[in-house]
Length: 292
Image (tube, rainbow, N blue to C red):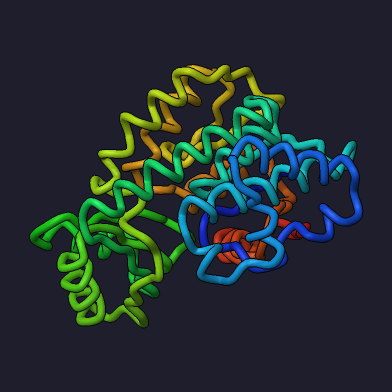
């Protein structure tokens, strides 16, 4: 069985999607439609912008979403998923690719999510950090013992967890993780504390946008970040998308669940190769490939 997976924030690079735009008329039309919906030429930033341009949450999220979704569309009959999943933002790409959301609604929702998250980031200094080579339980224990807001935000693969929260609490957790034997405790260059209680202000805004949007049953199960379980019910999918903003991305658990349910091949669609690397670390028995 084939699983298609879609990357999240951090996978962007200047020039992403340009081949698709230049060589595929249908892809070009979709990019132009997105420019129109967003009200600015995101393609200019994707193809010729700076790393700094692409790092802005309000640009990064729609850019990665567009690259992934348009790539899936360009595959035609090659895109026949038995199951799909996306890492954080990538969950929206997965839902559009699997037919649960229209392309246009996906663009609008991703833009609304990015704007809401950007606003939440600006309210209070917050950040994220990667903790390498400690067991999940140890990192959870460290976070629970720190004063202030700090939580496990991304369970990326065994031995790689991203924590998220207030700057001082992250600093304290990094120091405690290093003391506990972590190989690295590295603060990330991100706009704020994604997948933590710091994103609470963005929840109501996103919930409202999702409530206004038509969702349909996808063509295959979507393994969602919040519970790492397969979903096809539109109401469940919507609730999980809202919860995802302040809850951890259970990527390790999602990949394991997909394998348990029969996935033997994982194909990453979108910029970079981050998810291919993570899947290989989670389960070496499956075939892994990607398309950019």
